[in-house]
Amino acid sequence: MYAETDFLLALIKDDDWLGNAAESVYRAHRDRLWTSQFTLIELMMVAYREGRDTERVVSNAASLVEIRGDVETVVSAATYVEDHGFTPFDALHLVESNGDTIVSSDEAYADVTSRLDLKSVTEEK
Image 1 (cartoon, one colour):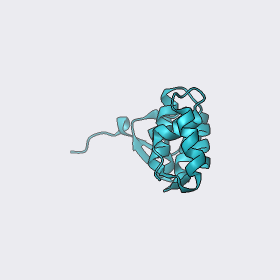
Image 2 (cartoon, rainbow, N blue to C red; image 1 turned 30 degrees about the horizontal axis):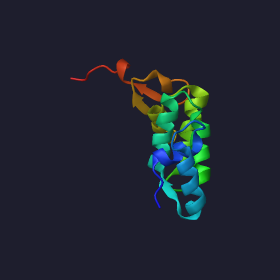
Image 3 (tube, rainbow, N blue to C red; image 1 turned 90 degrees about the vertical axis):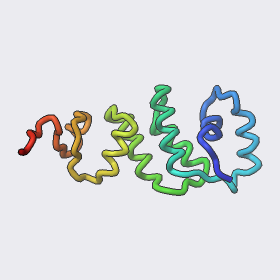
């Protein structure tokens, strides 16, 4: 059974109105539940928006159900959100770049990786 974001949020959040129902489903179907890396990305976005610890939310969700896809990238990105103040998508771009130079005007990358700043590029004619 595919676990969607709202189900995992209901399990993780202490004050979620669907918490009891989610716990009941989890107890009954724990061995059959799985989700994708995209659910983890959505959880990271929700946690970021709500001011929650993104790394903790993503790690907790990943420990509850089987994750199909690239879990390490999402967990690493969540760490950059928490430790360096990145937005979730900037953190995902950073991790996916795998150390390659990032072409961007975004200064968030300046202290952690090589960046080609678009603002400093002059037009070639």
